[in-house]
Image (tube, rainbow, N blue to C red; front, side):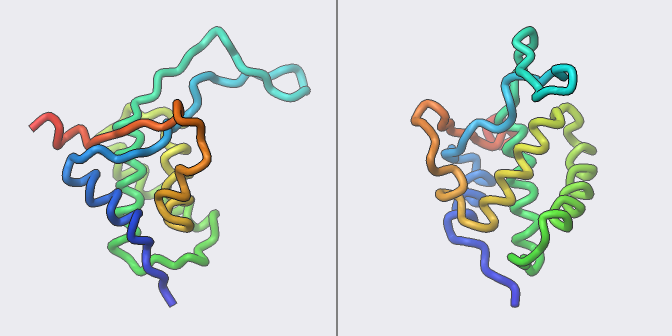
Amino acid sequence: MPAKIKADVLQALDDWKAGKPVKSIELGHTHRMKDNGGQSPTIDLSVRLSNDQERAHAYCFAIIEYFTGVNYEPHLSHDDYLKICDVLEQKFRETDNDLTAEELDAAESLAWKALHVGWRRAIDGHRDSMYIEVSRPQVQST
C-alpha cells in the first residue's frame, strides 16, 4: 500500500514552489577528496568548491515533486530510487546542466531522507551555523 508523504515535506515543497524561503541544510561538499596512495582519501585543501544551494535544492524539490505525482512506495529500494533519480537528473539537466556531481548526490540524498522521515527530521541535528534558507530562483526573479 502506498504511503502518504509527510505533511512537512509537502509544506516545504509548497513553500518552495511559491518562492517562500525554506529552512534547509547546505548541500554538497566544500572540498574535493584526493587519493592517498591506497590509504584513506584526504581532503584536498587546494580546491574549495562553491555549491549553488538554490539550484541544488531545485533538483531536490524536483525529485520530491515527482514522488508526489506517483504512488510513492516507502519500501522502494535505494537502488531503485537512484535509478529513478538517474532519469529525473537527465530531465533536470535539460534546463540546468551546471550542477556538480556532489550537488546532485546531495540533493538526491536529502530528498530520499525527507521522503522517509519528513522534512524536519531530514534536516535535524546540525549546528545552527549549518542551516540556511533557500528560495526558488525563478520565483525570486519575477
